[in-house]
Length: 481
Ligand SMILES: NC(=O)C1=CN([C@@H]2O[C@H](COP(=O)(O)OP(=O)(O)OC[C@H]3O[C@@H](n4cnc5c(N)ncnc54)[C@H](OP(=O)(O)O)[C@@H]3O)[C@@H](O)[C@H]2O)C=CC1
Ligand SMILES: O=C1O[C@H](COP(=O)(O)O)[C@@H](O)[C@H](O)[C@H]1O
Image 1 (cartoon, rainbow, N blue to C red):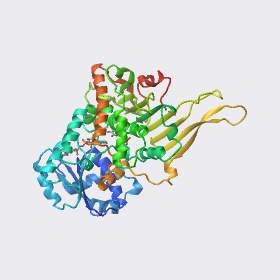
Image 2 (tube, helix red, strand yellow):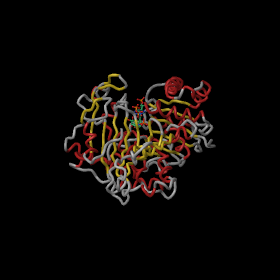
Image 3 (cartoon, protein in one colour):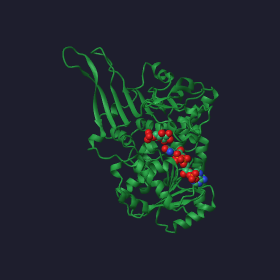
Image 4 (cartoon, rainbow, N blue to C red):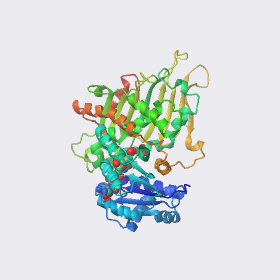
């Protein structure tokens, strides 16, 4: 347990992210005695709740999110003592004076400002905090993704935040980096001598990174319809995964070394511009269909979504990295909502052996699964028992939950919130990373607009539009299913 005392201020404390993810993560950290002893958690939003009413709201959500066996009345009561709520409008400078009085004047406390609001409030909140004298060297600010909606808007936000906070005080969160298996990817690559010699263009045919969801847009239509899958998922989560697969070994496992290597990968991404978008990208939008046997509506009938929306709910991109290690190796990225199954996985497809001694080939795959279960499996060719040399793929399978005695894995937000309190930004995005990612994304979105590439419809519960398959099939490859 840390000795410092801490104020965790959650702007947007009544929102979906705060109630569904942040408070349950804080509940677990409290239960496991990982929070500094007199941590206060102060939720902030415009809604007019009393602190007691807010605690009731928070309890309902924590009960729903925390595993039944992990929720206890006693723990809840002690957690609720940390909780507080202040109604304020974060766009109004005057309200920050009130916030300052509410917090008191203890300059020794670590103040974490978690901005779980839309990004258009980020700059205002930072400058109002400064004006109210609420930023000192112990303050930290956490920014949720996506940061902006383009390179220009991200630069403006970063500049506004940078005018108030030094870069080491800024934590740009991407919750995928808090997932255990994602960190295990670094362990796999950099703690096992086996993989490094073959982790390169000479031995790898291609890489697939897939994040497929069964969920639709839920109650986030107002945000999502302006974002789409490219800004919501590819710009951040999938590019971060790509960086971890492709980066060079960092000199040390610390924030600057790891982030230096990731940014080099982003800067080496080959631009996809103009007509390239037709060959190298696929956009889709879910139509009505069935998920788990239940009828679900088309995207454009979802709440707060325009009936004529051409926002994509699915994207696939053939990315290429122009550097010594990766030239010529396609990285296929795909993500979509309302697909047949929820899976997040990374497939490394090695090249076939140079001479097929036994006739049938294939496999030679490393599969890193992040969801639904965390596992790493190596698909090898082995001989079928009996006469002859008939080969088939078999798995060397490591289920990480079993390997670590079914210990409860921390939720990504637990890990990342604790890192913020401890001031460790290794698993957070640096300013130049976010901007390099937008630099690559912007021309693709522009290409879609210029060439009027509307999203292809796909039935909810299916595996996406047929163009998704074509992206790989024309190169003699196929998506892992
Ligand atoms: N939900 C999720 O799963 C994820 C969300 N994110 C990001 O997190 C951020 C929040 O998302 P989400 O929780 O879904 O959004 P919501 O729309 O559910 O919540 C927005 C929150 O901001 C508050 N708010 C809005 N305007 C003001 C204001 N002027 N002053 C004070 N509070 C304000 C709202 O409360 P009130 O109206 O009462 O003021 C509400 O609490 C976004 O940037 C999103 O992209 C990132 C990853 C996942
Ligand atoms: O950031 C986001 O991530 C979720 C998917 O996260 P996961 O941990 O459940 O894989 C996605 O549903 C959401 O649209 C996006 O904003």
